[in-house]
Image (cartoon, rainbow over all chains, first blue to last red; front, side, top):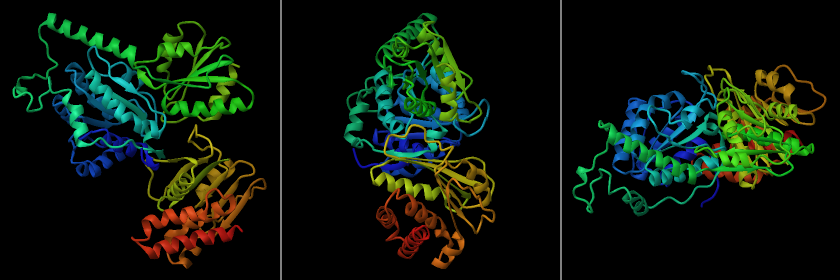
Length: 360
Length: 178
């Protein structure tokens, strides 16, 4: 670990990705994630990597498909409308079981929406996003430091499960500067070592396997019996991910909680402030923050409901999406309420506090 | 200790930079900081603002709705955010661009002709450094030495003359609130 630097989330995730061994990056600019692509344009050549500003989001994700098929650490990034354009490619990458990292610095929608922070992409991000039976592992940071830390985690998870991993941030996390401390950069030897785990299936030429070109990267399986086997194998993989990769944070969760909140990403920062203010007034409220939104930490959210909790309130910057997962987690034990803010606007700690007080 | 700072002005006046230097210096002094700019489709001559939080404790929400320190470099900023300053807070305004005063009795108000002073120092660009001097002079949020060190680190070789003007502007700002 080095010393702390003050950086925007967009720049921090780019720097952290390079340090985590990303040497191929393909993207198309879009606000509010453009500092990410700018940073990559500047720094990737210095890291002896490849940067391409593709002609479109569709082209960029298909370049990612190609590089991932060669077992390389590859990343793309965009913001909501651009992520929608990439969904066909993401489905192909998931179908072909390739490791890749996709960053979504989400903004207001639907359609072109606006360029302010929003969480309207939750359903898309946690339910695969494109066509077919698949999931992407989806991590949702709530600080610049966590955003940066997720780079190496995302690449490791993508490698481990041969599955696309999405980091779901938003305009606020992308634009905000906070102190960040980076992990040491992987050496070229360490990167090669990471990539070698893919040599038995990928298309990268290497000394171990002169017949590399006989490996097939494909998401097409025309025989239904064969496709059935393939999709069932994917299903087993998703079960394994659900079992092993739930991540969450408990904030002020204890047996004396009067109420439990659930929020992720930027919204969770606001809820934390409200919980702190309520604490000063002697009111005891906790929060479970899902860090992985797929797999969703159902058990951990349910476990956060203490003996005195009469209600769970979910806070999101959308019309109510994660609240469906929270309801599945709580399973009727106590009522689940929802407060949202849309249009790229963000609720204030005072708004959240007033909502919580309605139920105390 | 927690400071919720809002700096606002016309694009190009350096409001975002005020926040950046305060945040960097506070970070160097071991504080928790966040810097959140307004961003969007602004027209030329529109306003830009930044929310900065400096705190001894971890920062939950980085959004500043009710600042205890406001820097208004132009009249629209003063009109928009002046009424939101927390009682007991500090408001610093640039009189060259703010003909109308705020006139609140429950906060400390400082007025300075920042464009004029900056021109006298030798470069109108350093007007934001006067505001920084006034902030740290009044609140002691960060020390002058930390700012000098940070500014020197990247300006000493590149433009020593500009560095000197920047430091002079900070000191002048500090003197204004003595």
